Length: 95
Image (cartoon, rainbow, N blue to C red; front, side):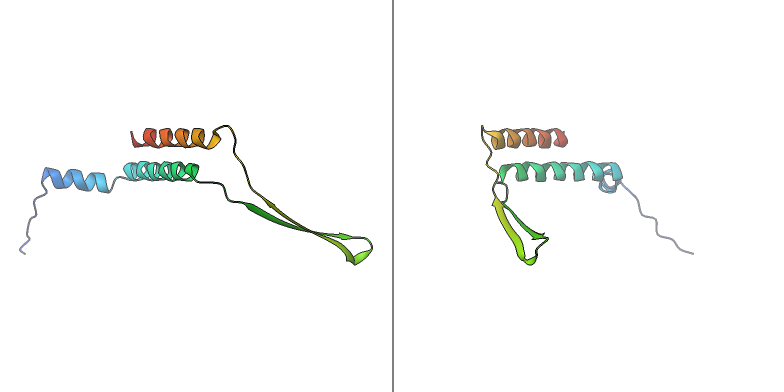
């Protein structure tokens, strides 16, 4: 039986080891998560909408419909500070 031998050079072995390392893949996922948090910290928060239906003991015709919309307003440079902290956490994850 004839078998062809393939030689594995050092560079290929190192590349395969780094590509298939579970620990390195886990760390890369952590870096990507921190990158997403830094991006999210730069964005404005979404407004929130709420609806509430309150019925009374008098019946369905005496119900109260309550609609509410709210928008978070961040004061005192809070978003800039959150962005800076998230960016530092991203850089720390890169190291």
